Every structure is written in C-alpha cells, then in structure tokens.
Image (cartoon, rainbow, N blue to C red; front, side, top):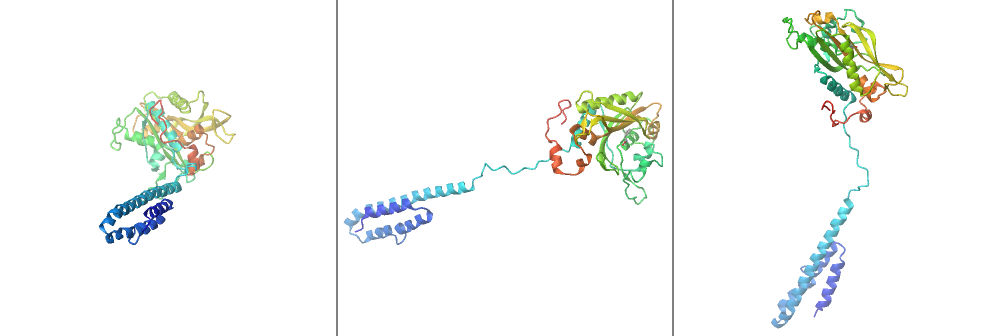
Length: 370
Ligand code: PHE
C-alpha cells in the first residue's frame, strides 16, 4: 500500500523546486500523466471493495486535486518570472543618449525676406512678383539700357538658348523688371490697348525674388536675392527715398544710429542714382554691422528715370517716383553675422542648422507676422 502522505510530500517538493516550465511539465506527467503515479492510484480504485474505496477514494482524489492545484500555482509563478525576465532583458536603457533627430530650419534669406516684407507692408507697400526667366525687353530695354550697355554682355548675364522664334531669354539680373511689369499693367490713365489696366498710380510695391549674375566671391554669388521697391505718385522726390530707407534700416537692424551712406552712382533707369552702404567691420572673420571703417553695399536706388515712366505709358510731368533694389542675402549676412555669402547657397546642412531659424518662431510683436 502506497504511503500517500510521503508521495504527496515528495511531489509537492519537486513541484515547488521545478526551475522552469519544462521541469514542471515532467513532474506533472510523472504524477498525473496517463501512466503517472497518481493516475495509477485512481485506476486502482476500480479494483477495490466498496468499503476500501469509500476510505481510499476521497484520499486519492484529494491527493490528485492538491497536486493539480500545486502544479497550476507553480506554473503561474514560473510564467510571471519568465515575463519579468523577458521585460528586464528588453528594457530601454534610459541612460543612453537619445538618437539625434534631424530638424529642418528656415534659411536666413527667407527669414530676412519675411522680416523685410513685414516692415514694408507696415509702410503700406504691396507685394509684386515677376518671373525668374525674363526677356530682354523687361530686363533691359524698358529699363533704358542702351543697346550696347556692358551689363547685357555674356560676362554678366546668363542667357538661355534662343527659342524657335529666335528670342533669347535670360535669367533676370535684377528685380527691376518687376517695376516694368507692374507699371505697364497699371496704366489705366493712358488706356493704350497694349496695356492691361491693373494698377494705376499711386503705386507702392515691393518685389522680392531671385536674381542671377555670372559672379562669385565672398560678397557675390551667381544666384542671390533682391527686393525691389517702387513708389510712383505726384511730387515724389529723393527725400522720400532717403526717409523710407532710413526707416527701414532702423527697423530692420533694431539698432539706434546704424551708419549708412549714399554714394552717387549710375543706373540707366534712375536719375539721379545712388548706392547705399552700411558701416561694418570685417576684421574678426565676421561681418559686424555698426562697427569698424569698412562698408558693405546693400542697395541701389534713385528717382525713376522719365524714360521709364514714359515707356510704361505714363506722363513723367504728372508722375514721379523712386525705386530701389535691396540685397536680401547681404542684409541677412549683416544682421546675423555670416562671413561669406557663398556659404548661404552651398546647401551644407551644418551651416543651416547653425544659422537657420525655427519655423515656429514667435510672431513679430510689431506686425503679428512671424
Ligand atoms: N537694379 C539695380 C541693381 O540690381 C538696383 C536698383 C534698383 C537701382 C532700383 C535703382 C533702382 O543693381
């Protein structure tokens, strides 16, 4: 006769000691499997006399239940431990540095373009645009360039292959053709059929965009950005131009007393003409504004030549105006201290990460524009 108490004690000890699911399963088969010891005991009940079975039955069934319960309990303990082990093995090591996350940035030229637009918009200027691929008429002829002006020659201008009609287009060398496009559209006064009535004087526009010249050094890139300004009204004079630019410079640099100078110059489309320089220092490998004894040319401007007004169908005795072309990249370099303009368009993401701006910068409190 089997010692049930000793058998139970032995099985319970081995169940409790089973180190893993496989060992526990072996004990289960040994006890409760088809030919297990407890199964054999249960089977033996059938051969017993009723009296014997009455005594042995509850004992053997109780043994089977307690062993099954112990196995179930041990299994859940082992499963929990296994899960804990797997979690521990796969856990994130939070002490490791996070992988770098590449973030885009707003190019300083675009940032400065927005700043400039905001300032001029506040002064009442509207936005105008023109195409990068221009024709000779808008880029040169209508702007009073004499037929053999050196700026038309190959060393300054990128010309395109002539089209099927023989017309040779070019990459605009400045934003001044925007003046012509605005004014020729805008001549309601003359009403000549070749002009689409669009914007009659008074005209007050800025025209930002890319321009192209065959030129490359620390202060010249073959592609750069300008912002054209044009005001056409009655009784406009050079003082209006100077005031407008002084206002702009003070607002743009957020600096008291930025020193600028007007130098007499020549443009075929303005008379008189001037260039404006900003005082700067280039000695420390950076362009610093408002220091030093160096100058950086940032714009050309002047009074719109009567021929231009006439070319656009307006009477120059009635309408005068001023125009200017600002160098956007140069203003960005001056304001944010970039030493070499060529870096701006080298597409080096390290440069952009350093000099770029967040796309979600706080809006300009003065204008509400970002
Ligand atoms: N278009 C001239 C340039 O590119 C600048 C300019 C604009 C000058 C308007 C006078 C008036 O240099």
